[in-house]
Length: 337
Image (cartoon, rainbow, N blue to C red):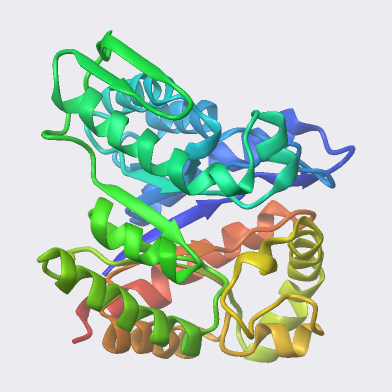
């Protein structure tokens, strides 16, 4: 089992982002010291009511202070970006972290972002596939000529190439079945999102397996899943401590419209008691161990990306959880069958 930390980097309006950035960098350094494997950093634009440090600048600093960690921009919203920019920026990051980049890619869902970058929800699927195809070609070929719906490469070359050959692993994050099939077809693995219910994921795993079979591809060696987690001395304490911050987060995500692109029958416009059922990992170390073992045994998950820090939550609560996970959870999971 591998363990990663999802750095949201989302903070309330009015917070001093210099202080918050320092806290997030200290968390990354501490994660390396505690034996975490990977740091992931998401991306949103125009993210009111949150402030938000963008993923690549943050991960560049992590590469300098925590050089043992794998780094995942997770996920890059490909329909918003030109492939040459993505290819050169991420190749540069792979050089900076000495070949430990994971290329997390996603499609996005927010109209405010699509509008700001000159595209639409309707165009996003095509743009995603065109961009990812072009990035792969730019990392594999000396010169690339390709005309797509929103860009043209005319004997373009990637100024710096990734250290990893043929290229960094590609993880596609997807909520909907069409995206899961795309992950089977175009990526090294499906990055299972942190907010779908377990029963929903069970149904989607069958979609993924069938799509892999259709492509003639084996089940991936690495299957990553994101999960919101709070570990404390009891489940009751974990819920009490996490609830104020997770409620704010998922209320914002509901307002952003994320649950509109989730599978039928799943949504965020429900009370917290119902929201957390079959979705978040809460509990004592022993309870967390058992919950993660269920994910491993039921789905084959062997990399867990943990979100343990949300907007407004003191950094000290995240640090306490990291220590507890490292000392009381990870050793048992690493030796479990």
